[in-house]
Length: 375
Length: 100
Image 1 (tube, each protein chain N blue to C red):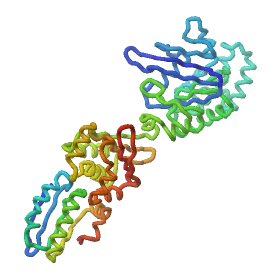
Image 2: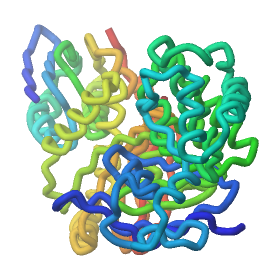
Image 3: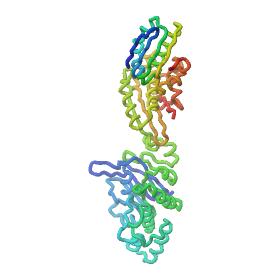
Image 4: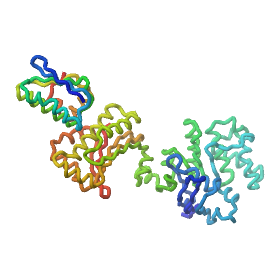
């Protein structure tokens, strides 16, 4: 596919605040790209840099072979090829809907008024608002205003449309009507880049997902890759809306009650039931009893201490309503599943009873003991 | 955790308040040593204010049960909260004990 937009080492600072560190990507004709990620990671700034609503601090943006940051670049001509739909619609309140749609083509593209009106009618028909041609923006709902904003954008015949959180300012009841229009445009082959928090929509409509974090494109992939098989930890945490509690256990003399206090506070914050809290505390305690097995305590303790201790992580996925407990320790330590075989088995019986799955896997020089808490 | 031991005629009442976990099971073990070394055979574990048990505690409950049975007596667990009872269920301990 031909690159329509090529972004190389794009950076943007606001005074000392670095919002975009080093953005590199290519957008090809016909692609529908959703840009997702936590708030404050520069998604909207990236979009606004693409059409120079923000001036980048560094890097290159090449559109159809032309570097738009070059002093010789025709910025207005470039902007006409690139439509933008904003969170807050940005319609002209003093103009009718039809005038909102025709003012740009007439004034900037030199289109005859009657041709602009004819095209305006087609576009209003497409977004389901033909009956509102003579209304004013104040007479429309938020969802209708946003559909007009999309039609207005299309009236300039852009080569690409940038959507900056197009549904964030809408009542939940109005989100679907706007997403429906964007989906229709995707099916028509319009090239689009969409900053969105609507994960199901992004999954459904996009050809590619950019996950932004730490001022870079942290992970780039197909919807299946990003939503179902994210490669990076932060992507996974974001996609599954994972809330996380971590605790470091240095050696056998760890602060048991301090750890329990951290776990209980985390559980209370996420409104876990008293049974869930008890299960988590028990699973952690029984696992640590196996890690610090009394029969080989000094030997195991030395290995654990030398290997940097034990990392406890409790992940709560709001999306899946699932709690998973991870213990990560040096793989020099004999497997705790094997250790449990030589014990009286009581700890493992309790662990098995409270979990839907228990497994161990190797990650580099560490072994993870993973328990999914029974729902 | 607090352990209060009382003798009521032929019976030993052990009242356990709070949590019984791997950190304080040693204290509980010490507290019940006189019972294990004594001749009293019938034991009631009063769990009215008992809040949590892990395998360390379960093992000591089992030790008390074995002691009582070896003397031909009975061990009874009183007022155990359902969420703690569920740990007995999971561990397979429920059929071994008498609950009231």
